[in-house]
Length: 221
Length: 105
Image 1 (cartoon, rainbow over the protein chains, first blue to last red):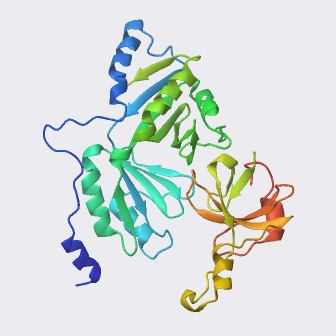
Image 2 (cartoon, rainbow over the protein chains, first blue to last red):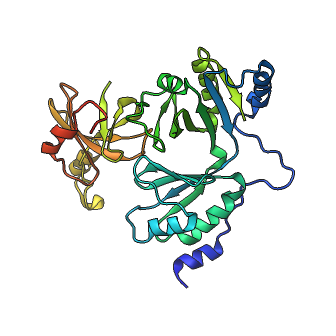
Image 3 (cartoon, each protein chain N blue to C red):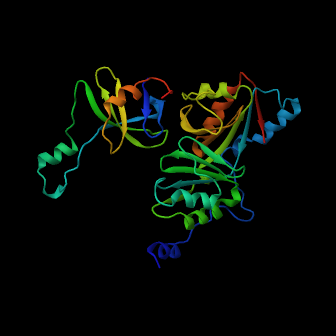
């Protein structure tokens, strides 16, 4: 038995997803986004807003670290997830799972919440050599910013160039967002995905409300 | 505002994404138990303070979170080139890619 197998046998991975009737709150729970969605509906203004915001709460977020050039690393990761390993500043998605390049030896995977533990366990078994897989689901949340003026809001919020020339579909950058930071991914022509820290979620929610006020903000599911 | 080329992201990013992390290429004494106090003090405390080109460490704090090296002119603030940890500066390439002031590199 290899050292690795021996070590894995003696370690117990923690299932971080609460079971049963434990209530889980997203980082923006206190902002009561559903009540803002109701306001949209009352006004019949679902599409009137220049900026649409939605929270994708409580997804599985896994940080994967490893040497990209290590033998078998990329192959194992691809085999375990069914996703190609994205190259510099890009992402790969199959609709349910999305893998983002964060740094030369770091990737961020998001997936439906219920899969966090299964994927974590699967990756630990599959990845060879000196690697790390960490469940950071509790530390992040995902915001989807879309609409005709979403780009204008981003221009106010980050110093990064968000023009089509510099920011094509699928590109991922970690950069400044207001006085905090975000992992920004272009998801479609008018849509951007922001992965933000739990501790800054309230600040960025206030920031985005303020930045999008002049265009009209609508909140969606 | 400096516009700094990260050798890992291979892009120019704005200065607010970075942190300065002191002089680069400082070698730790091979045998700390048996080096002189002067050698140890050189390693721990004494730093160059040149007027002109200075080899520095920078950290892409908000981006890819990697340390890299830069050669910066302390008079003009011009960054001549940036290069990965463990590499030697390529000044010829640096003049071409290090100071374009745009993302088109």
